[in-house]
Length: 67
Image (cartoon, rainbow, N blue to C red; front, side, top):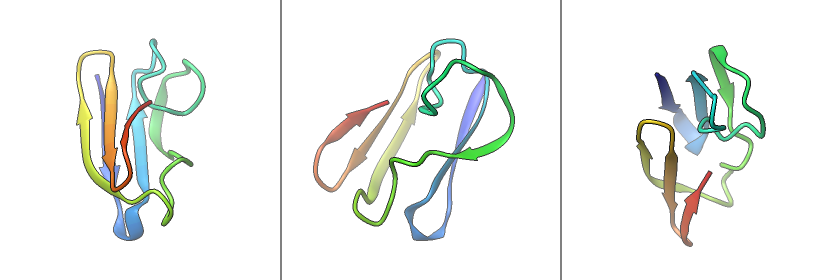
């Protein structure tokens, strides 16, 4: 199980199970606390965030970004 949190300014944080790299943090290490996903900046503003069993994806203003 994993989850995401969207903060003011478009920052996205991820926590939980990460056995398939679904948190988007560049590794497969589980996280007990929320960690920032560095991809999301003011340059890549988030429109929609989606999470499945072992996958996640985001829709930005420019394009669809699976991570």
